[in-house]
Image (cartoon, rainbow, N blue to C red; front, top):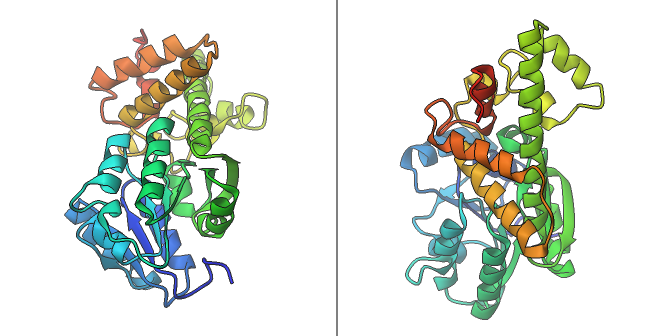
Length: 318
């Protein structure tokens, strides 16, 4: 019997944010009905709203600290914004996950956060040292839409044994699940993918703006691109022109979604990774400069990363 089909397996989920919300919803719906699930979320309003909406999918209880989650779970999934948050949740001496006492059965930790690979590898070593359980990095791609639909791509770094145990659990939250290699490999893969996605975002913004300024119907332009060689995720699922893609960030005036702050953070990680391994960049300086501008500009600050389209539309790029 797989750990995912065993109704005695207890699940913990920490971080019910933009991505964690849909992931936790799908997990609760797909684990056995009588399996136990506990969440930990610092936003009181977010937590209460989640508990109200998840009720029809199964019972979910609340823990006050990560330590309590570890004590009540056999599998713990974390989905947090930055490396500092992951480190705090795991290593806080008073109430972190690793402050829980070791027990006969291990806790299997799955961190889906997008953080520095080196930070993740170090946390994995601390998990091993604590003798509390196992650890894998399993960052995701697909945005809030993919999280809600359960169609995320997940990239795993960890041992073969830990990967095989975690795979059926990850498939409850995503459609495409890959074992990318040893600890840290999932995060390296994720960062490389995000770098490429950001480059594509800039290209899509340039192309769509060119079409709009020429007088083309942006919906028809996107329809052609999306069955032609220019197609990418940011031309189809997240087109930056309002009215082109239902459910995209542009439809919500770029409120919510994958923020420019998070995007810039992952870009910095990816470029640092490239420099670490001696990979040459041609486009990184321009892409980073655009997102540096986005962090400071009122048109984009705090908005979805595709909001940089506003710079192109306003003829105010760099």
